[in-house]
Length: 330
Image 1: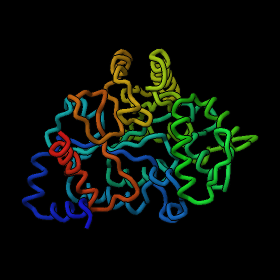
Image 2 (image 1 turned 180 degrees about the vertical axis):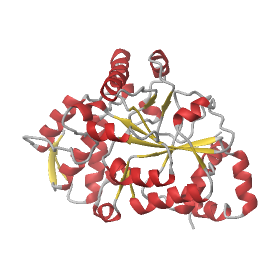
Image 3 (image 1 turned 90 degrees about the vertical axis):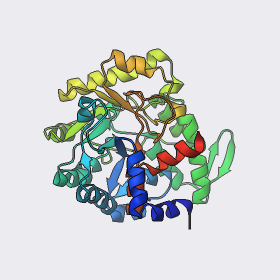
Image 4 (image 1 turned 135 degrees about the vertical axis):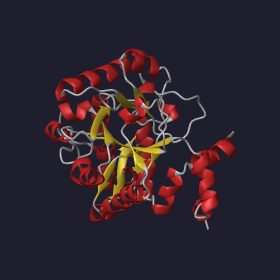
């Protein structure tokens, strides 16, 4: 039995569960990327599979929140309550703006009257949709060997493809979008890149969604760049331009920001000055725990990936992982 399976068994006892409830934070921000059909999920391979949860798992998770009378609120409500809700609360968030947020996730959330926020990438909305991580894996799947960094590299197995994916990922995070496209065209000898219109929301779909008061939109930067790798002026423009584009396009006040990639190593920690100057109310990361003092511009989030079953979901809501880190990593 794995350690986490042991913990899942442990918290099935009511006294243990009460203990963790007394120790956990006042709220947890869940974050997803995409929600896809179970059939489509079975067909996925590679690192990008971790970006998606199945429709059946998502239904189970939302049903769990409803049946256990867990308070689901918006980020705006959390701010209004000064980050101290009267009862334990959950905030639901999505990054990137995948089309399945509308087609699959939204009807489920609507059924339970759960508010949620989607962090959008204006570059995807203003031009032909494209992101490097989907393109990269799509091309790697087709190859058994490629010429990279002045040598032929064998990638005939999925493991070898994954290993190379993460090597190239490091390079992609240092580049702007134009250079990402040039690099991938060069690596795979491509004449044109994939049209990803079927993967991402378009402006009309977003306009339809925000007619529902359950839905909030936020900024995920203009181009989804790893901000730490760019100068402060560029970071300022990435945040400012994204806010202005979204507000102008959707006539919607943009108050919330999500860091692209969002781990500690992806953030310079001077961004709070920029976010404050631009009148944002919050920004969120992708790390689920930080030893840093509370800062509304570096809110942690709890990742909900494809392998999160009911027991794991409850454990995350109880804050068990975070509490254990406090105990063992201090």
